[in-house]
Image (cartoon, rainbow, N blue to C red; front, top):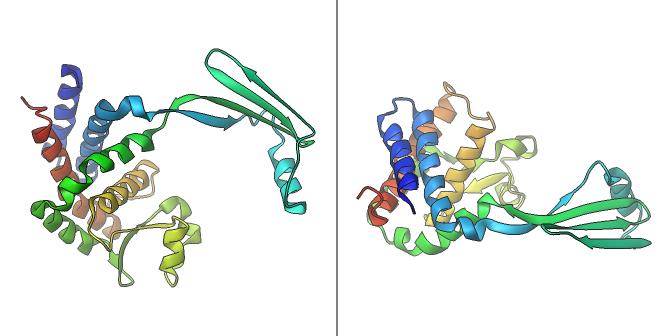
Amino acid sequence: MDEKQKKLILAWHEQSVNASNEYLKFMSNWIAFNAICYSLYHEKAIKERAQIDTSKSKIKKVVQLLVNEDEGYSAEAKIVGREDRLTIDIKLPERLFLTIKKTFTEDNIYREFIRDYEAKFNIDEDFIELVEKFQESIFRDNNYYVINMLKINKFNQKDITKMIEDEVVVQLNEIKYSNTQRVLYQIRNNIFHGEKVPGNVNDDRIVKGANPVLNYIVSACIKNLKINV
């Protein structure tokens, strides 16, 4: 972690501490957290990833093929290797054109952080106490969860088990660091996608409840990684 990264992390964390608006407080600390994860794990976040070229692929016809048949077989396929990517041209007979190249995948840095810090936070009594208070803000239907607002049209409060399986909700019934981070990440996504509205009583309560937990995580990282030294 270089000095520029440390300065950036501290600046966003300080802005969070000084912010009077709960949403700005949350997002400032999330940017600080993201910067910490990136500085620690950015090399592990570069992975090969396939992308469908929608300008060349006949996606709807390929999907229709699989609706009518259980399987599809290639009539012709070609793989071309270039300096920074592979291209795969498949005819089923409808065309499916893929590009595989190394890209930055943000989720990987968060998974790496969980792997390294899960055990530490799981025995941290102060962290556990903050999460218990946070749970109060997301309690509903005898469960503790937040909704993935991009899938709100699929939400059914009578079948929370299925909602969890379908990733419509993210649950925090069991206090574990990994569960907590996933809930915080979902809150972050809901704010970023414009699905949490400042002034909405429910949204305000959740964001306000989440802030002490996220702040504790960032503060602990700053201390343990000696970012403020």
